Length: 146
Image 1: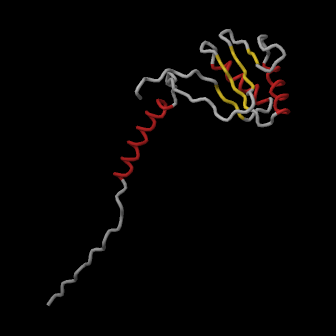
Image 2: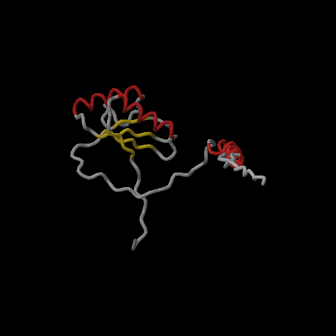
């Protein structure tokens, strides 16, 4: 009698990674296409918002104003109606900080003034040592009954 020898098949414990590679390549292509789109700027129009006045202000804050021509004015200078330079703003803020180290500095920019001019005024105030800098806005009219 011939014995039949049973050959046991070994179990194959391999993972088929081809579908995972396909998915990875598809995702890579999608990210390569969308990444440049995310880096481009988008034009935005800042919204108007109602603001409430600061409460509890005991001392008058230092106010840096910027007119439509980009000239700077400071309310504590010798002549508040005379334009001042960015360097003078830094010096005036430093002098005001010696009197009131916790004093508030407000930047009041004209609607026609450029964003750059407003930022230059804020940087000049920071160089003078100002830690609290705010922006002045006009209160928009709120609808009645809201």
